[in-house]
Length: 89
Image 1 (cartoon, rainbow, N blue to C red):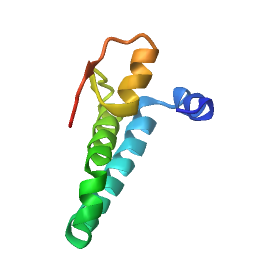
Image 2 (tube, rainbow, N blue to C red; image 1 turned 60 degrees about the horizontal axis):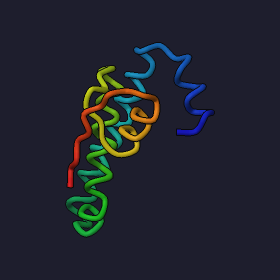
Image 3 (spheres, rainbow, N blue to C red; image 1 turned 90 degrees about the vertical axis):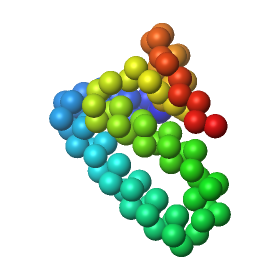
Image 4 (cartoon, rainbow, N blue to C red; image 1 turned 135 degrees about the vertical axis):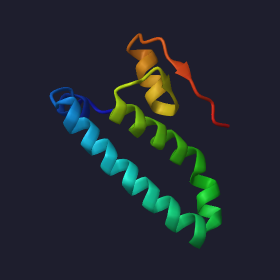
């Protein structure tokens, strides 16, 4: 995460972060619906990235980061948090 993004979101309310995460989840669901049907190869190539993004948005929306995946898990570990890492492979 860039420092600019961190600076932006650290000043936002939990409700604002949750609303933005909901928008992200809706966009992900739309992409999944389109790509799984229209381009199965792209879906297979992006499936793990999709799952990581979905989990990260769900964590941002709920405020619970006990389980994380991908770059969010790396970031939280770098910040000294004790995170249960979900390996979706």
